[in-house]
Length: 179
Image 1 (tube, rainbow, N blue to C red):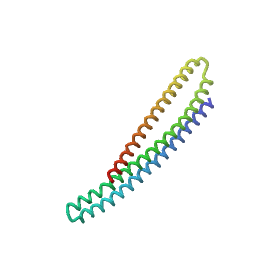
Image 2 (tube, helix red, strand yellow):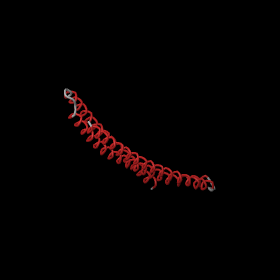
Image 3 (cartoon, helix red, strand yellow):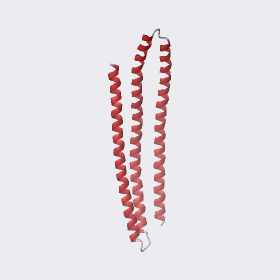
Image 4 (cartoon, helix red, strand yellow):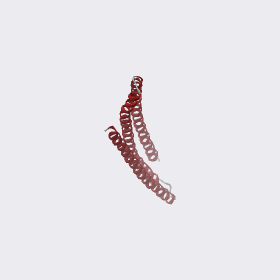
């Protein structure tokens, strides 16, 4: 019975360590997004002030129209750059979480399998059929989880691919418009 307790404690510690690592990664990625947003906000404020001064200094409607045309290109380029950087941060975070979750899940499954084997070996006489049923149910649930994990990864990959394609199209549109 002591072996079961030790195995459960070890598995719990592994899960806590994995959760702590994921929380640290999430925090780091939130910091990246905050930095990106602060940098973008500062640049937007500065550009807004400069553009306002330029418009106020315009002498006639044609000059204002020319300024508006001039301002559109950098705005589109900066917006595209922002979206691409945002996408890069999110993609990196997704990749980190996927790798960590897969590694963590493998450790959890090993610990759980070890715990189940130990429990089965130390089960009281007459409970063999119940333990066999429980082991089969747990095996089926692990297979279902693996299937769900594979499907989720495929969905993430598809979303990432679509987001990358949209970002590229936006960048290409800005390049064409600026020519």
